[in-house]
Structures are given as structure tokens and as C-alpha cells.
Length: 161
Image (cartoon, rainbow, N blue to C red; front, top):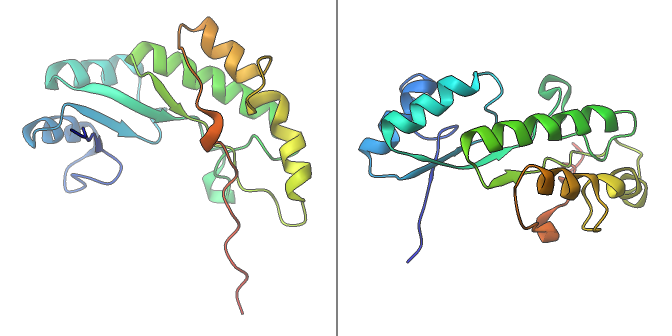
């Protein structure tokens, strides 16, 4: 039987974000996910989860500068250090919130950057090699497993005509 969690970034938008935990519980959900917990202190999120009886199922790694079009930073030359810092932050939040899953935001390659070059930029960090930094960091944080089959960069939108 499938189990679903409420994505608080998209559901219950009629109430402020922190009130969506209770709304999800009242709707019968037992778990939640949302893209970016980083605007809120961990103790506040942990309290909301506990009071509403919910499990934190998934968070995303930081997306970077969304206003500038970033949707992750791993594949962007010059943003690798920020990506690594973001992974450390995501691991801290995931451990504190007891989330077993982190969606690693690989990013949108800049125009003109080939797919092979963007892959080379991110390979030491997130590709499924036993020595990858994400894998080593997640194991040190007590997280197990790694599903790298879904790690990819977001495709660029088609050019406007």
C-alpha cells in the first residue's frame, strides 16, 4: 500500500507555513516534506513535527540563489564550495529532524556549459563513487544508503522563439 507525505510547500497554502504541520496532521498525513527548511530554526521545526505527530520524510539541499536562477549548485563552476557548505547544512538539518532523505539539488548548468563539463564539476561531490564527498558526509552523519540513480541536473527550458 503506498504511503504519501504532504509537501508543505504546495499544500495548505491558505495558512502560514508553520501552521501547515497541524493542517497536514488534521488531513490524515503522517509525514511531511518541503524543499527548504533553512528559513526556520531547527528547534521550531522539531517542535512542530512533534506536536503534530508527523515525521520529516525529506528535505532538499540548499538551492542557492533562486533569484538568480540557481536550482542547486553542484554543477556550477565557482559554486562548488557553496554546494559543499549546503550539503553540510542539509545533513545537520536532516539529522536534527530525523529525516532519512535529502534531495541533492544538482543545479541548472549555465548556458554554454556542456553536459560533460557540468558532470565533471560535480563528480567529486555527488556522483555515486564510494569516495564522493556527499556519500562520506552522509555516512558520518549516520545516514545510510545512497540512491544516485536520480541525481541529475535540471534540464534547461527551451529557448524562447
